[in-house]
Image (tube, rainbow, N blue to C red; front, side):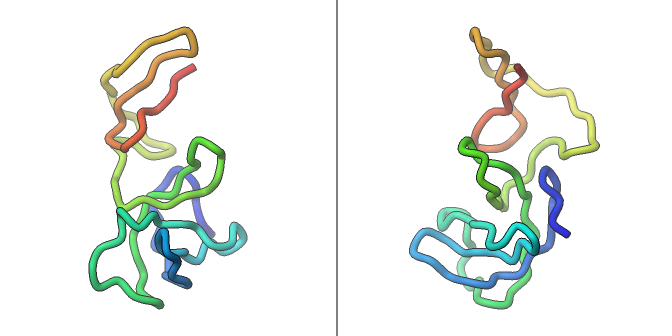
Amino acid sequence: MVKIGQTNKLKVIREAEFGLYLDGGEFGGILLPKKEVSEGVSLGDELEVFVSLDTDDFIIASTNRPLAQVGEFASLQVAEVNKIGAFLDWGMPKDLLLP
């Protein structure tokens, strides 16, 4: 069972022009973007990836590791504050929104 917000070991099931699809079980294929695919990875390989939701609420995989995952605590640096809320640097390409 894939756990969103945590690191999972997932098998490569399909290649696409824009990345690899990993077996997400009940979630179907989970995209690992091409920019995060290491050389030599092929169909059937198992990869350890962090699974989260992108800005459009699609499930996506990343080889990057956040400073904290679901169920963990961390002290995070505030990157920006605006009328929407605070954006925290959690070690991922996009900052984490704290409403």
